[in-house]
Image (cartoon, rainbow, N blue to C red; front, side, top):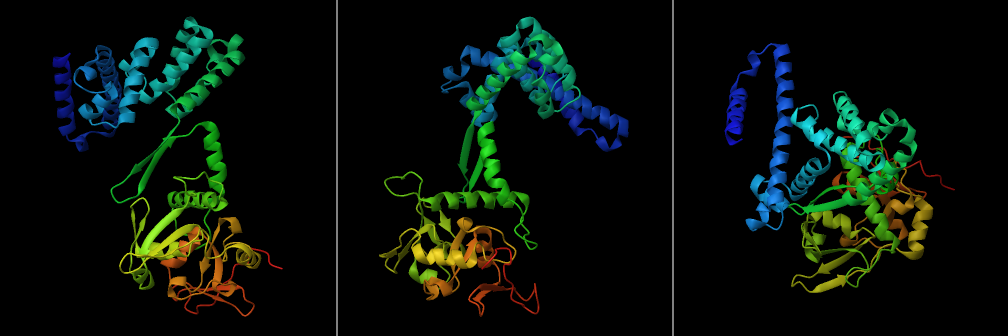
Length: 416
């Protein structure tokens, strides 16, 4: 096998160095098809090797805690990817020889093979080996026409084609099996990047996916004509809004003996001069602009230090606009006051028109409701806020947006 793989590697290296620009279009397409088919066949070889190494206990003999960990170091994979490789190799070896052969022949891709293997395993458990064998042929034929996502949807009704007399009962068994797989595979990973940001990845079961979409979709719509955020950025900000709402309820379990809350530490001089950076209680650094925005957020716990790092003020959660004052603000603004925004009060923070670090007082005439997106937008932009003659907030756009700088109001929320 080593010699054959070495020859194959040499052929692939020669193909990689070939001038593809010289190929006619039909030859270019044919070469792509051949390369794709070869990729699947090599995947079958790789899975067979992984299965044999795992069966021999090579990883443990070389000091690794598992085959997945050994593969991570050997092949420079992530542990989840290595674990999936080991599990799928075992699945093909034990219960799906027909699928392994289809992959070795290049008739299915690796992801299609996972779908076929899962389906065949379910069919075998519910209808027996003979029916499962018939299902493989149909699924492999479908794999030549459909991508893995559509193939998985079609596979849920495979028994309608190979054993219609037991299809309904087996469909229930398949659904139960899919639910068990979803429960087994559910996970959420928070990976901290070097600059303090988090990368989210994971797989949600159907119920949790429905909950997330129900909660987040209404918050991902553009907030107005000037909303230049990408869909991904809107989803990011919607998740932040959900977290703020959860913190605002006060019903989260205590963490380390304290209520769940965001703690930001900064120096008083830096805050006033708009130069001081801040630190979260987890040790992550924040820019001065972010600190000033959070300092007027009603859902954080500001800890302000003097020049010698003595604690000057540890605010109470929602310390700035609470109780009757918050209720009065809600009655006046009825939601985010920024022009064109429809966010209701529960999604809004109380913002000082004149920042409290600049001497602004905590009162109705110096406060305004703003959603998370427009809170950030105001801090980052050049809009000015003031109260009109009727004591309702109005926003003065920057000159580049409106040379006349005509004040704008939110007319979405009905007022009495």
